[in-house]
Length: 142
Image (tube, rainbow, N blue to C red; front, side, top):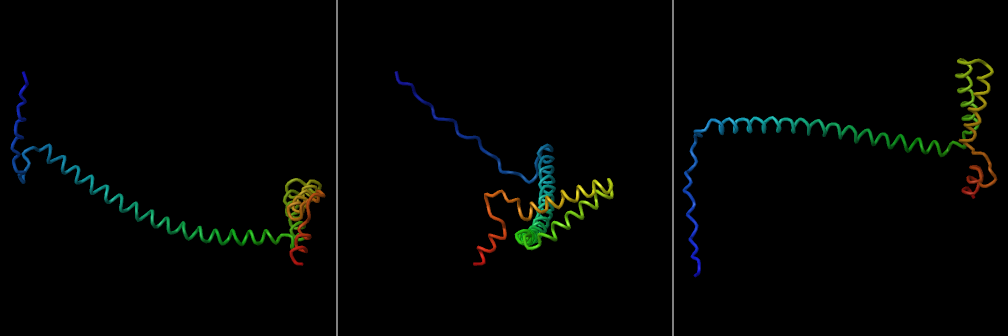
């Protein structure tokens, strides 16, 4: 025997919404949600304002930093032209500071080491495997 299917019951009639909610819990929930949304909106606006100000300042600082870095790299590339001044200045500075703190003998030794390290930084020690900066300049000029 075939089973007969019964049609589903009709959906219940919904009443039109009224202007006043009889349930105080729903009213309280709506007020809390509205207050929370207003607070979050205010917080988002203040955060956006602060962030945009910070980003604009960081952008200006990064531009200045790039300019300073490019000048520093340019000066570092030209260090070979001022080698003697850099070496003597480094030796005097390091020797003076150590000499004031520890005495003349250690000051002279530290000054010599400071000058040697400056020389190595400017010219590099000739290991027989490469060429010095002056050779590169001569080759580039010709």
